[in-house]
Amino acid sequence: MIEFIRGAIVIIMAAIVYAVYGSIKRKKARDIASKVPIPDHLGVNASLQLEKSVMALKMALTEDYQSKIKKRYFAEHPKTNEDSYNHYFFELQRFFLMCSLAKNVPMFSEKADEIWHEMIMFTKDYETFCQQFCGQHIHHTPNDTFKPDPSGRAWFDLLYTELFHHTAYSEFVWGRFFKSPLSKETIEDFLKCSHADLKEKYFRKNADKQLVQEIIDSLKRKIKVNVHKTKQNYTPKRVVEEVGNAPLIAEAMIFTSYKHHHDYSNQMKAVYGQQPVTYSSKNKSTDSSSSCYSSCTSDSCCSSGCGGGD
Image 1 (cartoon, rainbow, N blue to C red):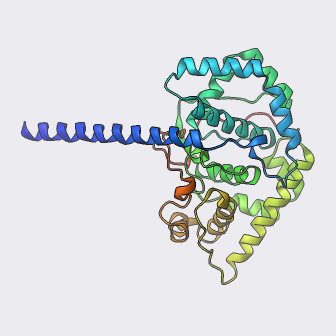
Image 2: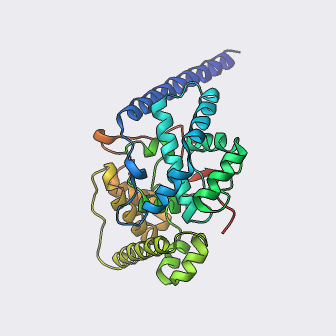
């Protein structure tokens, strides 16, 4: 009986600690959301010709549709503050831009997925949005299952960093970046495959041809350079852990994925510390309960994604 009581006390104390810790994390996320500015034009990489895609997305998301989405979302999630919502919606728009270019982009954010779910409740508006934005339906599967997808997450991280500048709030929405190695298959594809084959395998048929060409060129170049480094006497330099250095960490992910695939986590920790993409106190993010998977890791995705279609 005494052992049972002790066990019950331990469970209760653990639950209290977990609840308090969760409350602190949520408050921290809210505080940061109010301080982090949302970039113009989705904060896209200026070296890529993304302006046309951003404009198409903005035009398809009419003010009336946005107003209906927001009203429905807050009716279902009254405890969310407006600053946090704005960041969730901002990151969801980035996700849609990724979906307009690449095939089978998994959804790794529970918070962004919740807004997506509210969007599709307005069936006609959502279909109009999809057709006006990218010419085809962006499929959504209900977020009711969780499954590990480390390879999908690594590809997501690489593509996201190729297209966008990270903000100090990105991690709160998507979870930690660069925790999983890029698959050897993906690396070999970008080393050996033609542009046509890469476009067929990784990108949508109706995506902007020039833009896809630019993305493929950039990724092929970065992968080739970092694979070449694995054959030299090269050790990645320690990078100051700030938001603006995400592209450097992405390149280290390529290097480490190829050279130390089975010891990826330890090798990344050796270079970037215990939390390789937890940024400095100036722009600090942490693992967030807003991730789409119950353990808040970044190598799993919910069943949601923009797969389907070419």
